[in-house]
Image (cartoon, rainbow, N blue to C red):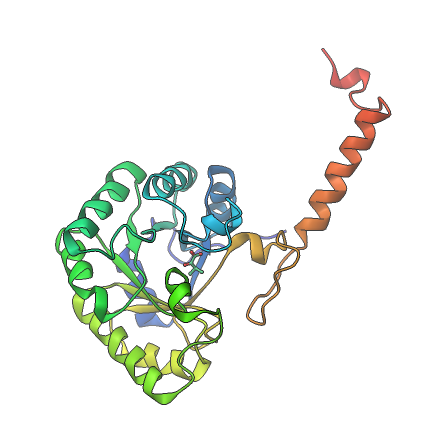
Length: 274
Ligand code: KIV
């Protein structure tokens, strides 16, 4: 068992992201949605924790990320923040909380910062949401962009395939990334795009750090969903995922042993009673 000792033990900020990009130090990010997991992830030396709207899938069992509400994201964010000392906590703005107009977006953003305690927010999209991004950043809230596969738009795309394989779409993605950087985003998630394109974007951006998921090694950092990399989600094994544990089996075995011990009156023993 090992935890990573960070080069810089201080609380991670947007400035730390810029410094890590500048010195070529990779940025490690994982999702978390609750206090217990966030404590463990933070203690292992994580740079950033994403309170992802993937909570809709892994915590609530929905098929898409669309149903999760602003109140639910604020709840998850508050739980995570209480468990974290060093990592930067970034919270996803859920579907419907910012797409309407920039005034709605800013009001939602302020609620997550005030009630959830996040340090930064993540929004999906490029130039189509640039006014909202500018307005949120203008009010002093750091923003992480998210391009490529954007799960909140699954109903427009119709599938979770790799994005921007064609040059025209790749060019649009680069333009979106440059627009987000120009608007002041400190970082941009690149999800499920070809590795060569992610590397091009990473090199084109001078300030915003790219964080890849299924986007190859050329990004400034990487993010995964914590339950996926811990192997808690048995049936989910896309090409980009590396499993660092197989907890589904470990948990089912342990729980099965408990059931069996209760049934046979093996638990509790005399030493486990008062
Ligand atoms: O919600 C999430 O977990 C995400 C990551 C996959 C980047 O947006």
